[in-house]
Length: 116
Image (cartoon, rainbow, N blue to C red; front, side, top):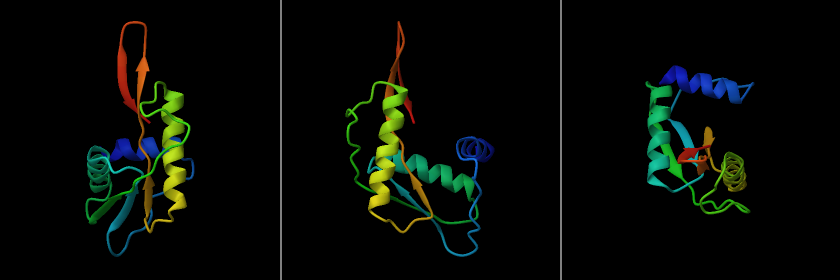
């Protein structure tokens, strides 16, 4: 799990490095109050930093210009970016800021629930 997280972060953020948390807990702010997104974030960061306490806090943010249920990867990505921008505007005191947006991807015969 840890290697997957590092690889995923490194491929999406070329400047990705793990912050040197020498004292205290890892503070993570999630651009959602969804218990599922908060718990998924908590599990991921607990695996990433197994020797540190992980404090995860959810924030109410509403992406603008995105449907309540995005219907494509592009809409899902835009929703995640909008959530992150709204979270940044709140100036939270966190080491990490996380935005997760679920979306429906449709093919000819099926619809898939995915996340960006």
